[in-house]
Amino acid sequence: MKAALFLAFILLQAAPAVAESPNQAALREARAFFIPCAKLPKDEQPKCKENQADFVDGYLHAKAGRDDYMSQITTFFGTHPPGPTDPPYWGIKHDKRQACAWMIVRHESVADPGLRHSIEFYFRAECGDASPNELQAITERADQLLYELRTAPTVALQPRASTIGPKCMYHTATSLFANPDEPSEPLPPDCPNAPKSPSKNR
Image (tube, rainbow, N blue to C red; front, side, top):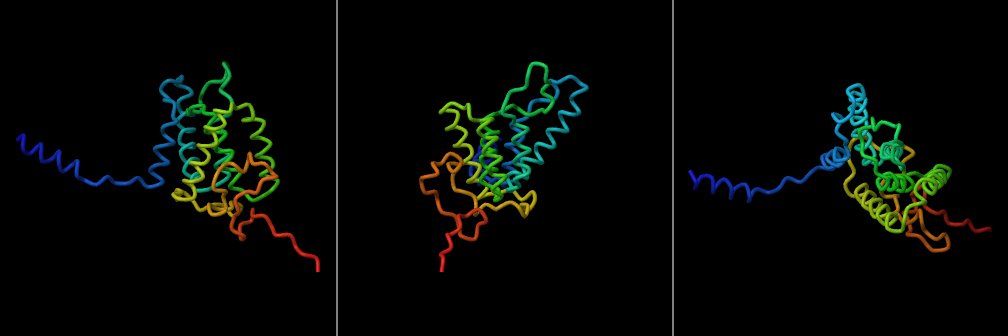
């Protein structure tokens, strides 16, 4: 009996680990942000569960490159903790680092200059009070999300037509903080957000 158990243990150790798919990884990440609905008053628990389902759906779509869902995820995380009279019925942990990081990712995911300017304004208003250490953590998380969007996006839905797509995203989150006098990393010329070459007067 002991020999059989030992052999089973060895076989289990030798079995190759099955890699998570991007969707499985995103689902695991999303659920890690849940606040147990059972901790809330009974009349708020159905709304909590509904919001958690919406959050998971939004998270999967955001990690597929959908900029509209990135905005939704930012709202779920919130940039300010709930007030004393606001019940946490969202069922999602407040996380300013995640909210600000997703704002940066959305900024890098849209081509419309007006929308990009709006995101920049909102970012400075909501995340501008971050300390240097907090800003570093926000930037690192945004860089990680941008990398995952380029290399292992989920397949919840195809990106919207207005989304520029992973190949046209900046490789890091630094463009939102970049000095406009410094050259930025070049993007493929067919990207809608790539700088246009000045036309020469003939």
